[in-house]
Length: 292
Image (cartoon, rainbow, N blue to C red):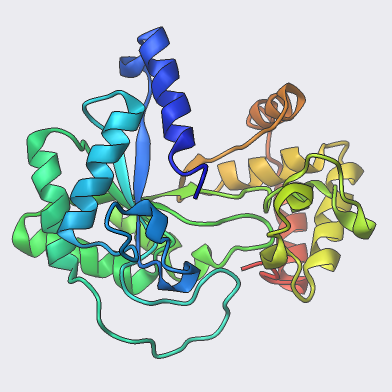
């Protein structure tokens, strides 16, 4: 709670100092149903659990604009659904409670901001095939804004996006913004054998359970070994894998040092070979999606 909004404040300060707003694509999100995460009540002025109601969307948009020192956002995303769904790491279906804001009502709330010019495009995040198609159907039948993107986890150890969403992304032109392409650093191999590098995400927050399930370590070892066999940094292999998928619009990188940033940027210059493609697919078949 104490750091909520700081990323936007830092970016807003940078934009104000540099005057480069027109040179970047600026995106933000509004939190979806927060009940699976303790309500996330600190995000709302009235202390309510987060939902995609019109009032909460209005408040979230206005607060983001203020923190970012801008009068519009290029992309605004619904950060996980308003309906109850399985959360990170879940692999089985459950018939959850069915009370949720309708897709049409959510789009109407966003449309009000699109018409005002405060939002240029809209997208979804941590969404599922049914949700994407319902949003698209409502847009088509009611003339409401169409979702332009989907930001979901996608990496060598989690290719579940390919099962139901990749075809939608391609045929409906809803490109994937792939987050956690390094599985929060796990695919670099830096946590293998119980290692805990100082300053790493795991050392600071210990929220890596999603990447420590059955079969995860064996799969990660396989990808790290493959990278080294080809003289590559494991991060390079993982990032370029995402970049070469036809349904991926952008691969979201993260870095805590200039060295990490250089590796991440340079990864996109790698020439992806058929040999690498066959090798990563063989590893995937042997140990599919251990980190969903």
